[in-house]
Image (cartoon, rainbow, N blue to C red):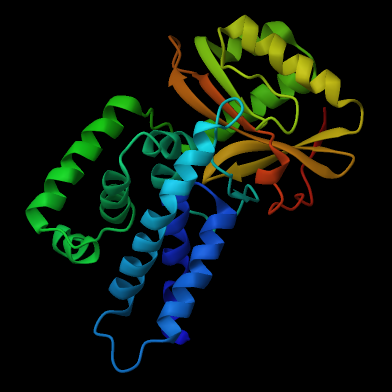
Length: 294
């Protein structure tokens, strides 16, 4: 049990990055524990054994996940991981678990995704990955190279310091709460895009909304529909500054932002990803402080 607990976070992290679902990842943690509990005798590398087990369990589950997503209503986004803004423990590394990256990983083959996650997020060697996936080291190196190139092409990343991203997020929050359309336009990149995941369960845009004015008006429209009981909480979403919206004390949505540099050096929001599907928010709790009325 002690060996498993030391590696529990890694097991969950692999499963979550592979499947994009908190509930499915937690199921795989339990399945991995059951397999671990049946092992008799010494295990030379408990971490390697658990990584191999959960990765192969995730690969087996990906087929059914692909079928579900092919029939998904509207844009699909992963289930968010949310923490308080000042959290220092238990927060996943943003560069390997951001919602934007997880969306890109969806476009990789299952094998490419597994190699990328094990190598880039958890630092396993290609020899270890080959042993986990029953492939040669050379084959895994080639797969890893393809996966990295695909991710770089689909996910150009602007690495602004976290404190600058938080300040830019807070400025956008203030403009939204104040209903200041002109200020919102100043904070949005001209080609900004927003994705809204309602899953056909709750009202959301069925297609991405593009363009600063369209996104600003869409955002203000959503906030007006939520009414006076809505509140917005600054949070960390998959390790990045984001916002959690509640209505009458219940979680309504979680949003996170991508940024680009403006001409004057300030940050502009280039993408907004908002998860509204209530089935993807059941694991979340409402933050205790820091809310602003919408």
